[in-house]
Amino acid sequence: MGIINEDFMLYNEMGKYLYNTYAKDLPIIDYHCHLNPRMIASDYRFKDAYDLFLGGDHYKWRQMRSNGIDERLITGDGDEFEKWTAFAGTMPLLIGNPLYHWTALELKRYFDIDEPLSEDSAKEIWDRCNECLKTDDFSAKKLIERSNVEVICTTDDPLDSLEYHKQLRREKFSTRVLPTFRPDQAVNIDKPTFEEYIKKAGVKNYNELLRLLSERIEFFHENGCRLSDHALEYVPFAVGNAAEVFEKKLNGGELSSAETDVFKTDILRHCASEYTKRGWTMQLHIGALRNNNTKMYRALGADTGFDSINDLCIAEKLSSFMDNLEINDVLPKTILYTLNPKDNYVLGTMLGNFQSAPVPGKIQFGSGWWFNDNRDGMIAQMTALANLGILGRFVGMLTDSRSFVSYPRHEYFRRILCNLIGEWVEKGEYPRDAKALKKIIEGICYYNAKEYFSF
Image (cartoon, rainbow, N blue to C red; front, side, top):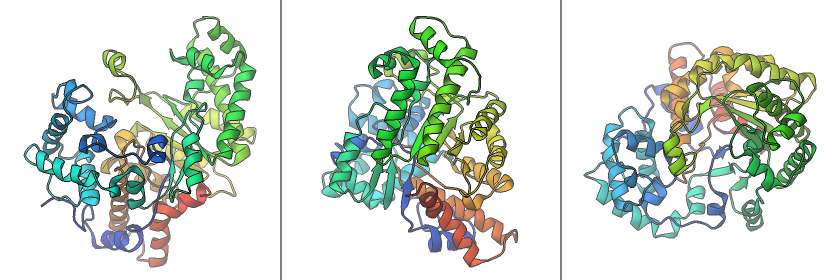
């Protein structure tokens, strides 16, 4: 038998009660993910278990490489069953890794498979999954509906037509699929793709770029967008002439790090002002060191499993940036995420500097992200928030995933949350107050996000 049972990740009676009474059956608001809206709109049918479980999933690719598997059987032209078998052979070694738990949950919740995935069970599980995938219950839309997902926020470039979001809205798909404004390519003037992107956008000077971003934000808003997202090694803050920096870049000039920060600061400040006008939430994902392996980046591109945690100092510039927005009354609702857990207390204290009525928890400490998306990372993030702020206002979990079977990660989070709070109650650190505990658990799992994002 497998590890998934009623008490999985629940080690105290109060935690079991909280999960089964308040958390288990709540809908999911997935306010940040990387699902492909075209696949949702076309109701994509998965070819086989490899396509469903491993296609595009760099978390799994990374561990397969660590197990010495040739790239041909990861992202290369190897047979898909061979790739599946290579992944299955890696699974038993992943003790302590959340991938082991996630995969067990996915097999159990979608396919009712209890047997642990291994090289020995690979063929049987492959066949059982593939038989299920032939049926109508395993299309992209059906998987979303079966997962009890109320809202999905995808991640979309400003130049996107949003045609698939429009199609889903016309079709009145039961789950709301909303875009998220992700202008990284317009912000990252230091990246080699910047000039090509600006050419594609058709802007010739800095004022045109600002105008384009404002127009696209309004377009996204008209199509249901209520969040933006920015991926940053650190949040910049510098004062200078961004228009001159932009012109210098387009004329082939080499920019200093100070000039780069001037440009990024001004672009982010402009966008934040536009978000505030519309009541959006700004997400700042801080601390990834991306594309470390140049050879593999050239071969496979970005988001293929060669990113890691940066260790820059982030506090001072982040504070200055948020303070500048606050002084000018353009600080939107903001979620701060850190990839480096050393900064849990930096962000946990930064929140309190900029909270303001009438929005409860206006500035949020985002859930354990990416390399922190595991039991220890989640507990560390929630404990820091509890120590320094108001855990009961936390907007909870998101998948941050490209996989259509990643929704059991919400279950994983809810079990860990309930076990943590149950432990505190059983130790006598919080009263056995059913009304208060219900509000906290249901809020973190669902209602806080629904209210915060006005969904």
